[in-house]
Image (tube, rainbow, N blue to C red):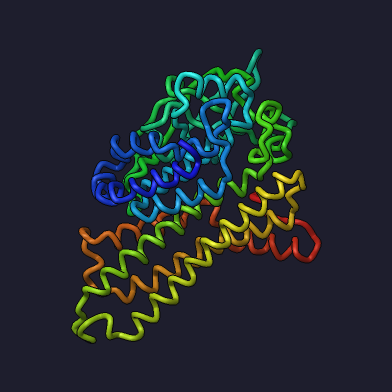
Length: 387
């Protein structure tokens, strides 16, 4: 199956994900059959090295697939975005880790929790790790987890930010996921107690952000020269834009059949119809910006050109604004959709709740990111680490 076949396979699955959205919400995790189908589609292998059964594809294909899934079910799309971007980062780890994760099963899923929920201290051959991490989306379906940690060298030494990758046997999951949106993501807590982590399973974020990661010695595709901040942040916003596209599609069909007590047929209310057009334009702009920014960076990497701070800053600006604009667009049409949309049987309200829940992810820090873009534009350099 080729890269384009993956995208077609994903699109064929979306009606099934839509049908199971209620089941995912009630179970507070993705249905097992959906996970099996997603693995078979190859979506999560689009950013994975060819050396381990992946496609090393144009990253725009991954985000296209993510948008399609999120339009059908917000929780399924969210997990696809977060879990699906992890193979890209795992390719930056030491090759021994890549082999441990993928040699036996190239469809192995990995969850994450990047906020530093624990500390690790150096010991002979590696580190000792303790901590609790929240919001590990899709973790019930994953066999490994990437965790954000603080490396503690002791008193007088500044702490360092690292990521570690540990197998399912070395941590436990605590079921804490009871939320108003993204209920089906199963974003539970990860708990680690007195764990020895071999040094090759840890990666220094400063080196990763500077393209000095050990995995680049074996994974030389231009794909792995893209910025981590851009790849991960757009996996979050891409899911939210996809949810907005799902609401637009659902709302078109809903409006055609809706009869309002104020206007009669909803299609005869010019304000509602105009609002749909306005929302569609806004959401389409968000999609266009995301794919343009990712595409321009990838094409620069293919040519061997450096990816500039200006490109990265613009991508960050458009990413946070993509979330903001998509949410504003769906709020307007949701507010005009009448009381019927608040019924739990209506898919519009679930996508609306999921999108609003996703907005609270830390990568959607708007003012800080826009300030950083302004500072960069004036020649002072970025003030945001997610560049």
